[in-house]
Length: 306
Image 1 (cartoon, rainbow, N blue to C red):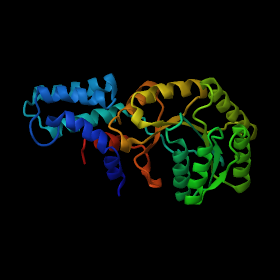
Image 2: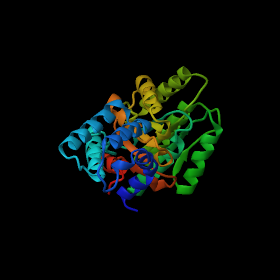
Image 3: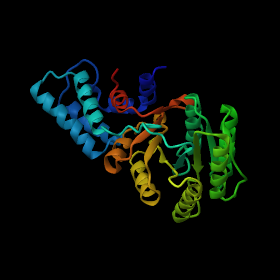
């Protein structure tokens, strides 16, 4: 399956939700004022937010005034163009033009249930597929299932992993994992962290401790600090990003589970408000369903375009 088809399949529920409410805006027939109004409701429901929704509607209304026989396909093209423009600069480039000296360190943060552990494994698999060596660090020691889940993924995908017992000091595991990654000649270390401790303050203190111990070996680590956000949570994604960014300092986002939700618009608001680039999006369960974010492909898939 090609890259665009993955986007289109993965975002099918978001498109279905929009097209279901705004039937007149899709296909070959002419649109009318009622179909434009229904599109507004559909975009709000899909969590595109007031700013982006207003911009899309404004341009479609302008085109409609000029051409009363404006077809649904043309309106969808306008919507996709506005969305692509709103997302200009949002595509995180990994590893970028100048990757850090190995090992580069990626810390994945986020609340429980966001897909951090699965994303860590899929990202490691993707890096290895590119011909680079990667080590995983199972630092969500607060939750026994997370360590076992990452071990299972590592065994399944034949990935290097450093793990300890449940309840072990997460920062100590991170320190040992970085030492192991350096000794093994890994190009990257991916650190999976806890999503919940007794309080938010405890969680942020643990993340800060992980950062400090990593910097004892590599002063500018971590090179990437990404929030893994569950796309089905809609606008709550923005609040999560705001909290983690303020407390830990994020460099980007990974938005997961977009294949299972009709609320695929929240990443637009997260980009517009916080200017955090989106590095990857999750479009399914398989390892290769974690795809680099492509703004034009996302925008066209949302509006059901080829």
